[in-house]
Image (tube, rainbow, N blue to C red; front, side):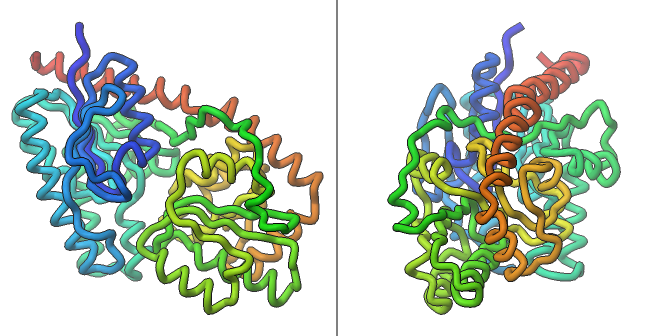
Length: 401
């Protein structure tokens, strides 16, 4: 039996920039599915329609990346309109049998639910726990928080199968989402990097002995301000003149962080190039002496598997991070964990690790081995295809051709 067409909807990043969604798309294509993706026009990916590597992509306009509650409302409203319009276009052209929803936000069930009337199965790919994300951004729960909890519940109710990025998210799907265990699959995010042996570029160190790196989004939940404050503590309080920082990425807080770098007097020791090419990123990861994951400890980040953590590990780099539950589950002994959300303690841990070459070498070796043997993408692909098989079988059992 031929594989059906699949529609993947993702809102927070375009493809192929969203590494997880693009890897999933390519794996499904390789397994024989026709893959169609709907995503936003942003981050330099503005072409409304294209076919890339055999995958059909439709992109919709979206308002600027949200930086507050009103911004979030505007972003989600414009995204929902674009997603709904393009989903019906995709239906007319491709007659997909499966919709794969990638949160956040947990509003995409509004796009998917009408298609269930035509026998389409829904797979809910939980990238982030949206209620915890909302609380981390906007503080204590209130009326809007409970509205977010309701949309999460409705998304689970809409879903026939759930993909969870880790065991913490799977537990939420079972308990809060009320999904049966046989319908919830752990599909971990894992880097699929073609070449980790690129030559390092010592010029990135700007004449310093050490290079400390960060790669990722720069939003108000990502804690990049802690890295800037840690760099200031290392430079101004601890007198370290031998460390250079390279912070790669962009996001809603990027401009504010650039201003903070100026206020702290860090322009000479902190580079912030914004979004970079894969070649630059991989070269930087090869060059850096350690990576930093600055996501502060809270109920949201505790449940997240951070891409940056895995990318540091793929390049055999030790790292320093705040003590997050899923951060430990990923890095294990390949990281130093800072127990408090403290820039000073982050700085002190960075300094100690830089001054301990044997520890850095051991942690880097453990990181690379763990990625290769336990956290590799190939294992995740097998579980994802198993989830799809369950969805396809449920169609057959209901007599959907």
